[in-house]
Image 1 (cartoon, one colour):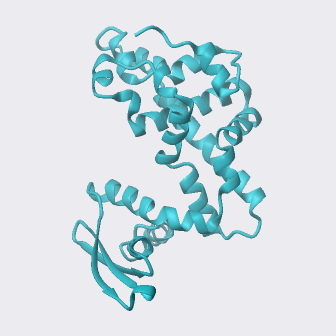
Image 2 (tube, rainbow, N blue to C red):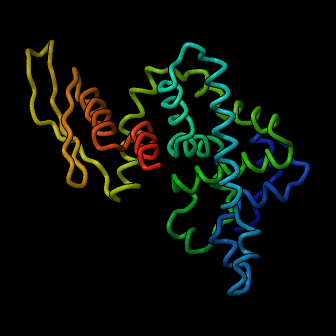
Image 3 (tube, rainbow, N blue to C red):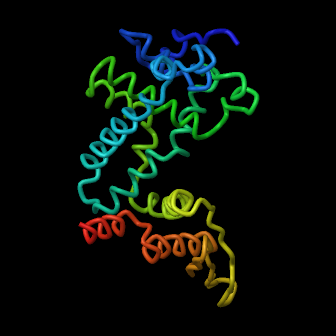
Length: 250
């Protein structure tokens, strides 16, 4: 495939780089880099692909979003802010932004990754967004990178609120933490339904590894959220639980 048109990409991003090689690196997947260096040249490959940029971009993104939420939602609790931030910087959200901008067509990826649909992979697209944020930061400084993040997530930041974040994030947070800890995906089962049609109460269970945690709600979705919230607390998977566990260990 021909080299991506970085000038056209800059127009989509609304940012013109002083050092365009930063953008080029941000759009380069490790699979492409390893195909274009001699065997054993790992250091050279790392200089070409975007994984180190992802690391920087993740931090810049987190700070820019946290600062925006702190300034715009003064009455929110720490838990509210944490849930809103988690949703805004999630893989799903960043992949959505990447698809909106059509970033997949500008990627430099290896032949094998191309064959397996790498340009459409959610995690890969989210990583590219983080890498671009890092590239803007390194090229123009934090203030410009923060403005870039705000423009990139403009509608999502404007619409962010504690209620929406709570409703959306318990299941997402549980899935990510269960996959990281147990390497499985949680499943939800409806186990009982109570009440007349206009006042239903649904009982569900979320199951993962050797854990079964119940939840209840006026809708199946609400019951699943309740089960996910309980699971995060009861199985010590919530951020607060992790902090308490670390403090106890110290």
